[in-house]
Image 1 (cartoon, rainbow, N blue to C red):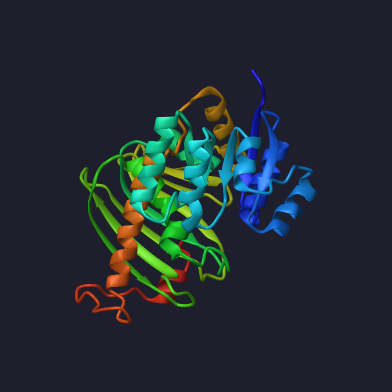
Image 2 (cartoon, rainbow, N blue to C red; image 1 turned 90 degrees about the vertical axis):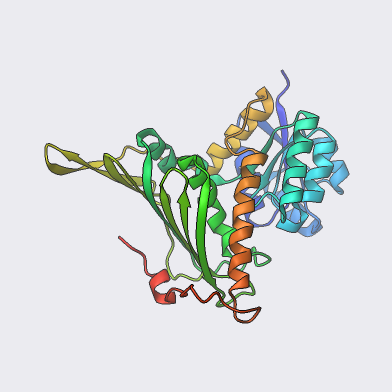
Amino acid sequence: MSILRTGVVGTGSMGMNHVRVYSELESCKLAAVYDANSAAAEAAGKKFRVPVARTLEEFADMVDAATVCTPTVTHYEIGKLLLERGKHLLVEKPIADNPTHARALAELAQERGCVLQVGHIERFNPALQALEAKLKNPRFLEVTRLSPYPNRSMDIGVVLDVMIHDIEIILHLVRSPIVSMDPVGVSVLSKGEDIANVRFRFENGCVANVTASRISMDKLRKIRVFQEDAYLSLDYQKQDGVMYRLVDGKIVREAVAVIKGEPLKNQLESFVACARDGLQPKVSGEAAAKALDIALEITRQIEAADPRKGQPRPDVKLPSILDMLRPSA
């Protein structure tokens, strides 16, 4: 079997990370890069000694599988062209800018027999894998994701930018339909919301409280899960965690064993294996489309409550910005 030829469309900060990791993997050959900004593509080509395609069509002829790391609004057109040419794709999240395009890509991938994976990278974080090994019927989840102002992805708000990671993870962990959600959010520095909080209630009784901010001074990425026999707290960033259990009437603290590693490397190794062997990816186009549906509905409700755009909902009290920025233990 010939080695899989991989490539990257979009050589911005995230795209360059994909180029770097592909260049390090022994399971594939980094065969091409392409960017509409030719200077950016040439810089990537020079740094990693990889051929630079002059057009997207030329790029498609040079690869078997590719990562798409371009602005969200371009994902559909780029993904459609590459899938129609039989290329396996890893598309950075969110999969597309609307549900119609998201599902069209998923259907096209199925028709062409191509793998379509979406870059929800936290699914490949060793901390989450450690959590899944101990998970039993979660009853309440508290998820917090704070980061400094990014000066990137400014075409979307914080829900589509970062909270969508946690939405997809929660859907994966709870595995029950959402029966209600109560979102709030505010814009501070951007056109879209920079801070958001959502409380989800699921059909099985589970509740999830999710907070995301991209104007915090510090970075924090944590998930806390309460289940019938234990409480688990994991840190995505530090890749460590603890579990508290009731044993003989006493609460016992235990460290959660996490085999640390680079999530992006784990993700791309998995993508290459799926593309090479025809396996189902951890985050398929359909799974990503479901997360996108929810993220867009959250965004819609936040915009509808924005007094600059309409009348705020009378039953919703926006949380204190300071409260939302304050990391909890």
